[in-house]
Length: 179
Image (cartoon, rainbow, N blue to C red; front, side):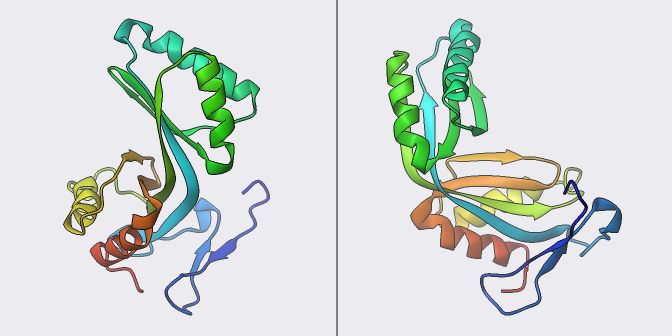
């Protein structure tokens, strides 16, 4: 990105040429639907700190994030609920993260063997029903999403690793992406 070097992303399901990823100034609307692909990131562990009293949530979050940051454990997919704080870490760092949270005396649950399955899409924030289409595609196949988060260019769904292939297929089918 820093040097504006384009790359090609290939499909796991075919020998098609793939999708060229380039600087935003080079990107043209690929399809009217806006969805251009599905990407995954595996070997993740989801942590949920709870119960956290609402008036203590900010302090607990800061203590946990400070300790994990000092230990060089990167976090993503952070979700703040009224009485909980959730985030994911690379599975290889889960044991260290759990030890730190225990050391801090924080109660937590952890869900291992997770995968982040993301729908890559541009200009979809203003499209009514877009998040519904994603949630419905997973629901119709019996795939529970543990968490969901959206950004300007994607919607990420955390699923159990054993459900990831079915989630990928469900999303490909829902958005009529070439298989």
